[in-house]
Image (cartoon, rainbow, N blue to C red; front, side):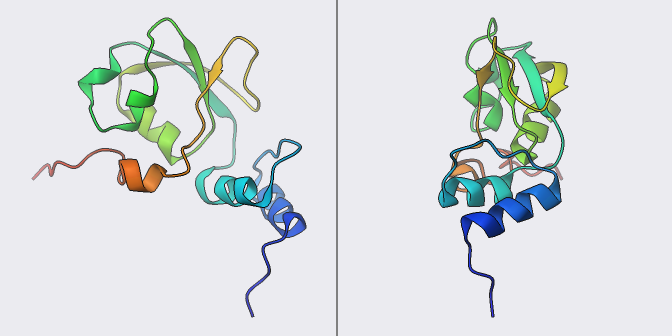
Length: 122
């Protein structure tokens, strides 16, 4: 029998994976966090080059070269960093006060699929 997805169960699973849990999250938000976040600190980043160079890629969620962003540790964050269009300025568990937080969109897989790399490199 499958485990019922209660708030307590999801919180326990997130803690077991080492993912931080802010207060006040509902069951849907906890499930989203469990399926999309990775253990470890988030990334403090800034655009080095215009994100328009990679249309259809998660880096397009960052729009301003003068803004400092915090992105939670996730596949999305790794894909943004691998785009080589950003500077990684550091890492932190929680977003610093002077940053704009970019959360993993709830429709991330649908919109970006494999990170926006729809071209085959053969």
